[in-house]
Length: 178
Image (cartoon, rainbow, N blue to C red; front, side, top):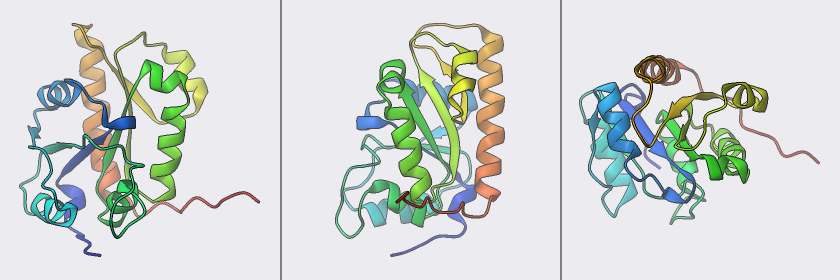
């Protein structure tokens, strides 16, 4: 498997349970000023190699569930971890309520993906409840116009967290409890 040490500092991959993103990727690209990358090639290794050659400041949405199995590796999350690509997890309020936010966070952590954090897309944002969950929530990206101050805070958290994730050493792999 090819690994790129320099790819981590170049941009952020955006993943979501079920690969469902709607217009959130373009909204995040607009918010951060990052370039929105086109869809992946059919060959994941070629796609990752192409990303590693990109200039800094890109956002790569993956319309594939990170748990989806693929060829030579167990799933997409394993490939993201092997390439050390900073990754942001996007979850709808329904995904969060169904436990998908927590399970996908655990999957990304298991494969040592440099997790930038998590963003709730749409729905009602309840900061106190999100903090109580103990997950790395960065904030809320509403599906309709929102408070400019809240968006500015999300922008700052996302940009700061992506720089930290790119520079961080690999996280310890999760160990199953027996």
